[in-house]
Image (cartoon, rainbow, N blue to C red; front, side, top):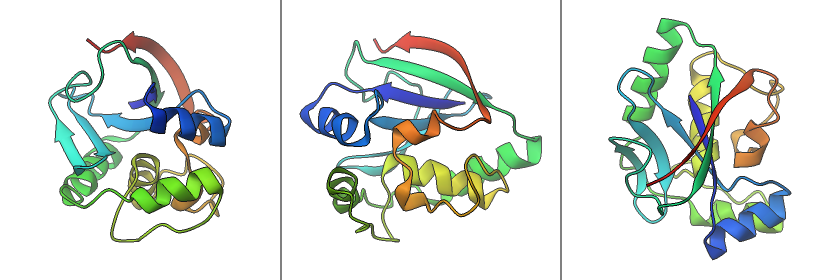
Length: 155
């Protein structure tokens, strides 16, 4: 499941403003155990026990389902695990804000991490020629392959 956050920090507001979206952050929730994979500043790519850990209480999060085969889900989990500890790409965030392609292929922001993970496992959520560096959190919500399942609030 893809979690899209409606963040409230100054950086979240800048991302939301510049990308014309209500969303500022994206993460993947493993349906098997409820754990969360994300790229987060300043820690980088991390794996957390659930959606509430490490996020501001009261943050609204929309949850979107995506159909995955068991092989795709296992592959996505494996790929995301292989990225754990990679640094956060703060320059890419500035690229979103100023519409510049300045991401670093050895670092990740939340949305490009997830998008690339899906691509690596044969799941095209957007047009096949869409580079991960152009996918902001709000762009995920535009995918015809996602279906909104719920809205939750972090505690």
